[in-house]
Length: 110
Length: 115
Image: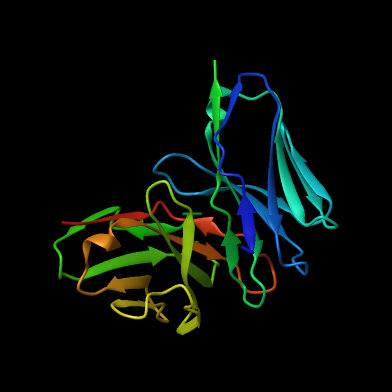
């Protein structure tokens, strides 16, 4: 099983829609998780950090489900500018590195 | 406060030449990570370094690739005798000292093209 797994998508949603992505992780000892946004041919940019049950920032909500070992990212009122690839990341088992999922592509259409 | 800096942004090399990619971490950050990304694929971890130490190089190919983070100056990822399959985007990320956070901040990347 991969340490971090994501549905690659793409998710095609209309403007104004609510969309959610899930990301499963295998390291049950992980205490922190991250969502990054990556635009085409750009570097990943940190979107949200999740250290406990969840985190909210405007239209974005990240939640952690420890029992089922997944994190989710919810985007409300989608904008065209939200179109990007969303990467989740979790610490590896025994080193201080992050393991990234392959990313979920979101396309918001007018 | 400048972010993570990488140079060059674009690098073209012929097969058999050497490629040197540089990364300067954010101010106050002492951990550096290198990743490779092929088109339409995810980030692949290559190596994790602290000043003068390689902590984890489990993602580095066994031959032709090396990395360093000297006491002074940027971290360098070196690829010897490049082949077409080395063409990719190479991203560097940095994070604060161990124990504070796992948050990593990425540089703009170096796009290597091998002709």
